[in-house]
Image (tube, one colour):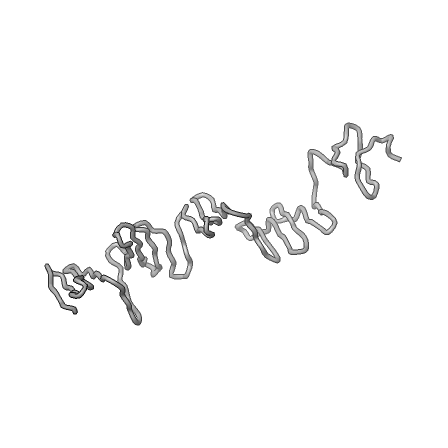
Length: 212
């Protein structure tokens, strides 16, 4: 059985069988539901003076989550009163600095910006695998820094110019090659006075007297 009550300026719908108020509207206009609420059709929510349109609380009344709408029509998500994410009216999604997008049971993959740098952090089991038939690493000016093609070459760039390209037989260097150590086929760096000699099948350090 149900009855209507006026209690201290509040309007209530009371469930007498359960001895519980199921719906209450206070004199200030706040509405409270007890139990499940089913809404059919389009429902409109207006923000309050603080910009919040919906508040979701745990049963104990401690932690709560709020949804709001900003001045340009974007949807905002709040952990209590701290904004943690928002959708722009353009469809873009944004989270503040140092908050992370976490994926995996153990938060294995983390994507975030700390205010100074951006991170893709593989912090859990396994490695970070990037797949694609063609991969590009580019600078903000859309210039290539690294290019990799599946089953083909990998190219390294300096200032948008190719400097090293892998081939089926080794690598091709464009420009000068500077190194502190050159090893022969036997991983030897040679000694003073020796020169590199190709036998056609290998490269060896030899003295001038050993060269025929």
